[in-house]
Image (cartoon, rainbow, N blue to C red; front, side, top):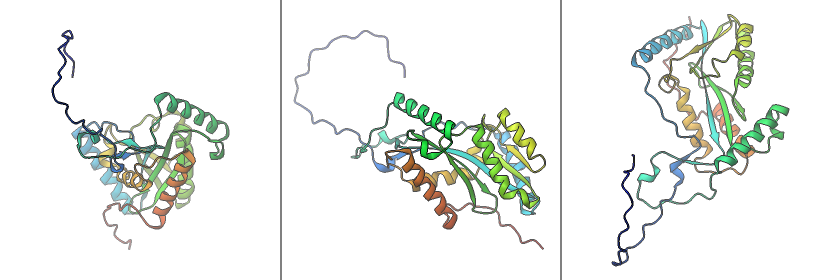
Length: 270
């Protein structure tokens, strides 16, 4: 809303009876999360329908045992909690968080130090600062298995290593591995050309149309449950504690799933 351009005109002070002050609006634990609030643009209906048909064909081949279908995505975790969109609309009493978020300059400085330490050593023991944590994950169609990798930051080099780790698990099956991903810049980076050429006819990326990932990728729901299990409203003093907490939640999912993926029932092979 644009403010009017009228000049400020002083008014005489109002010496009427004093009114009770309103209590300051405070945050509650349920109104915070570790994900940065971002706007979701609606996808094109025609592209969404066509992508749904393509995925249905891939799932049919996966049910027949011809290919291995993986739904891949990345998410970001914050070391401190962020207010959810719309938390200020409620008029109820709220509680203040124990730790204030860092300023943008502090976040930028800590992230720069984190990247330098990771690029030089690629070891978690050398990472002493940072605010953000990235998780790469892919769920196998028809199962509850999530193949994940936790990294300080996500780039094309980390995605290349993730592809090699996935193929180390499925390369000996003799089936083609199809990984469904969104159309982000990292998934279309030129640095992936050598990796895709190395796994030619064994691995391929199936990119979804723009803005269709939230509608067609089932792992999006898993990220929401995972972040809730990590603990919205909990502020971690350093990145290592957030890493350990995230790792425990993901390892617990392998033993006792925290999210139920709804797949079509795969008929037994005869």
